[in-house]
Amino acid sequence: MGSGRRASLGQPGLWLRLPAALSCCLLLLAACQAPGRTVSPSVGSPLPGDTSIGMAAVPEDARTARARVGVTMMVNNTIRDFTAAYDRQGMSGVIAAIDQCYVTAISPLRTPQDVRDCLVLDMVAFRIDNAASGNGPPGGPQQIPYFRKAAAARRWDRYAPLGNLARGEEAASFMTNASELVLQEYNRRRAAPRVR
Image 1: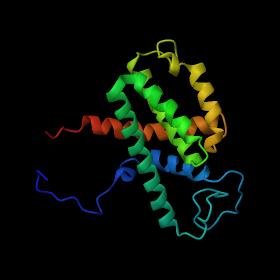
Image 2: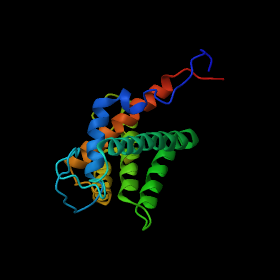
Image 3: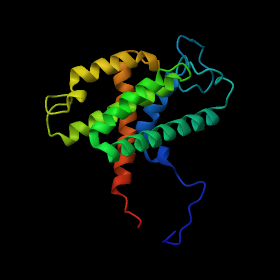
């Protein structure tokens, strides 16, 4: 590395730089793991009624590490998918990527996590389009029709249950918190100096 410093394995990662938003996102991700299962809370469980399959026997540190890896992967994959689509075709490419993501995520071999990843990509694009289109209200007439309130709400209401999220407040909270993590990392990467 140019500065002579070496990166160490113990160096803080993304999850240590974003503790408050991550905690909220981790709790929401853990709550979405299994539909309809009710398990009595285990000692050290991050949520009352932890519904994670097979997680009650796993020590707290391992569960936390596993959740952090999942969140980090979601953040990296969302940034990768958004950037690749935007670089190819702008926001129309992002819209096509979101639609394709939903189609792929609801196929029989996919999981609810795949649908949640699409919801996060959709919310990130919604927020970026809102920021780029002016100071109007989110989902207002200044945005691309795909991201206007009615169209976005129809998509989110349709796909949220497939991602094990209740329509309305739970889905909105998950998408807002997860997209905030993604946008913080996306903006951090954009502000980083370019290596040539």
